[in-house]
Length: 142
Image 1 (tube, rainbow, N blue to C red):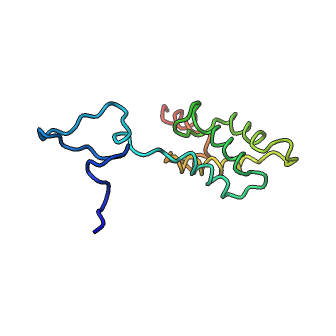
Image 2 (image 1 turned 90 degrees about the horizontal axis):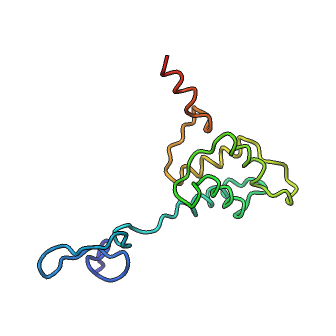
Image 3 (image 1 turned 45 degrees about the vertical axis):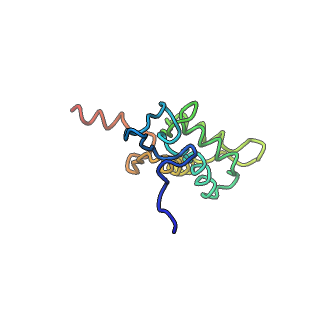
């Protein structure tokens, strides 16, 4: 018969904790793999989602460059790009060698939406993406 779910005890980095001979759960070192869970594949899913948009001149290398722009330096979660970074992305995602014109803002915003979805970051369609904060907080102060 097949067992359902991960085995208690067992071997490998993602095994579940077991009880020792005294009935106590075994102690795990901070950061052990079975406690932190499997690796996060949001970066790879984001790259695939951007490529799946089928934007002319945006292949796997360009998608990866864009996803890195959306994630904090050194990895981590994706964050909405500032207006300045959105404009930079329009010019820099496709290489100049490709001969293709810069991407338009709407295209880059659709790419950003896909990346944020893959990282589970809520996107606010009504705000238009990058311009969140300033006008909303100003309205609340009145």
